[in-house]
Amino acid sequence: MYDVIIIGGGPAGLNAAMLLGRSRRKVVVFDGGKPRNRWAESMNGFLSRDGINPREFIQLAREELIRYAVEIKPIEVASATYSKGQFVVNDAEGTVYHSRKLLLATGLKDNLPQLDGLEPLYGKSVHHCPYCDGWESRDKAIAVYGINRDGIGQALAMRTWSDDVTLFTDGTKKLQRLDLELLARNEVKVCTDRILRLEGDKGMLQHIVLSNGEKRAQQAMFFSMGAKQQSDLGSQLGCEFTNKGVIKTKRLQQANIPGLFVAGDAARDMQMVIVAASEGAKAGVAINMELQREDRK
Ligand SMILES: Cc1cc2nc3c(=O)[nH]c(=O)nc-3n(C[C@H](O)[C@H](O)[C@H](O)COP(=O)(O)OP(=O)(O)OC[C@H]3O[C@@H](n4cnc5c(N)ncnc54)[C@H](O)[C@@H]3O)c2cc1C
Image (tube, rainbow, N blue to C red; front, side, top):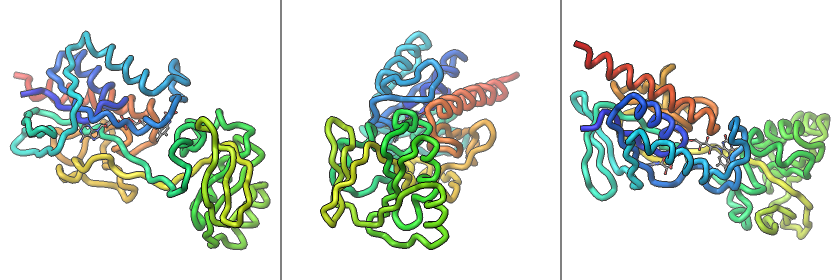
């Protein structure tokens, strides 16, 4: 029986593992090896690690855990249930594990635009998050992709990073007169033509090719199309979700099931590595405090 099973070995799960390892808890971390930012070459906005390769970041974190005797199992978890104060977890090979507490740190996966040529550019010059990649795109010709009216907010926001911003609606024409006036006042250009493909070299966007044959020179693209849970374990366990599809938690990452905690992108709050790590730390401390209370004589 483990004190704690952690599902997800990204920044949230590993930071929780560190606090729990330091609290001398018997901990196992399961990780399927698909962190949300695996497409990116650099991880930005994490004080002291700004610009590090995300894979190197995870490697460093794992090395730091060695001395705390945290077990890490590189395998997916297929199912998790809670019954009578105990969690039962089955890995993808059918091995069963039991724990007193469970932390879900399973992250999200992004909805991507269905555009030819996107894949080699994604995470390198095509991004979602201006706080992660806006600085590297500063003063570039920035395209914002958003169907119908979805890209308006992001196009306006990107003006913080560049004077050259164009909103591409990919053949959708639902922008209204007031939208167009707002965008024009803020010097955001608008292109409503259908996009045929993205062209680039070595991960760097060069052109957006339109269905009318026109090629627009663009150096970066941002989009925001939402994300979904990477695993269905939250649903299996009966978690409550917000209308944005993340799991509702209390101040110290507690979910609605006793002994279940959720940290990182899978839970509510800003979706950045440093926030995920900090939620992991909060969950680690809160879990240890619950265990201390339960064990007190
Ligand atoms: C392209 C891109 C670039 C980004 N750049 C930045 C950046 O520069 N700076 C920044 O702060 N943020 C960035 N982000 C956001 C960042 O990736 C997330 O905020 C962060 O990864 C969240 O950490 P997490 O631990 O919650 O989840 P993740 O890092 O996604 O880790 C979750 C882990 O859980 C595992 N998992 C899921 N389900 C299971 C299961 N059933 N069994 C076992 N394991 C499972 C996954 O395999 C994964 O390893 C970026 C995101 C993207 C998509």
